[in-house]
Length: 362
Image (cartoon, rainbow, N blue to C red; front, side, top):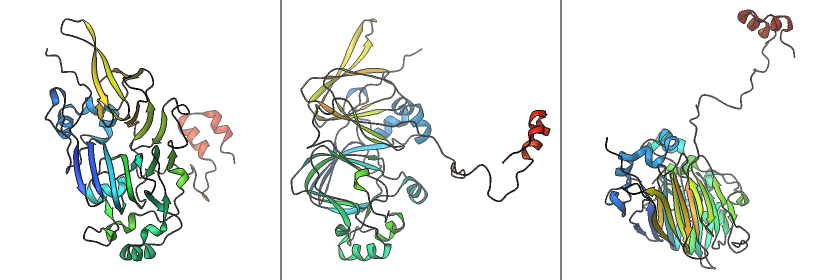
């Protein structure tokens, strides 16, 4: 019987798309319009969708495969904004699935670099009405209603579906999101999607403290010696992980994506050669590099090769399918109904004489 080939840390050729506001460079993505191509190892030349077609469960992990099927569920890119980023929002999974047969788009932005004059606009600073928002979309004043933030390197922001956001100035951010190309522009121009987005927007006041994690100017590596969770959600989870010494990882039920944001490291995988001799596979990862670790790899180590090495770690925790017809918050009894004697009836049916004597009590 032929032994199956072992999967390995997979890297992809970066793919950059240019816009009026700057560039977005995809490190790992299968969005249809973008399909990352493998650039290392025996899978080199295949796209991510090709790899998923053949090695789907070995790449994703059993739980992820069971929920998403052949769709690789996350995308990792770098946003380099050099000007005015358009006012945008994204749909959630339910709306995107119903209207476009696609995933919605939850996003985490991790600020890599920001000019002192750079701004991030995120969520409404007060309650907003659909009528006022529509008018402001047409006259270009939406940003005036959003929370204005001066981001610094190390800040992380969660952009939930339905949240209106924008940016300006010079800033660079690592972007982790659901694998979706669906975006709605709220600018009054030829790329506008104002009408399509109106019923998907969260019009409530946005509490910035719930979606802004500060790990930059006021948080040093010594204050955060271990992993810091930036986001834990059904869609995906993200950790900020300093690698000061060798770290051991064992296989879970999900792939893991490592994005090196500083320093450099070696990914080392125990194995045996053709003669059965133990050896350690060595895969380097340098700053600005990203690697996909298939769920099939049972054990590996991250070994720093430079000081101040730090990675962004993306993975998916087990996601359960929820029946939309079941409300988990529903009370067991309906108000106003007479349930007296039900326990006794059940006891008669089951032959439980103790329950028959007791009956139902308020």
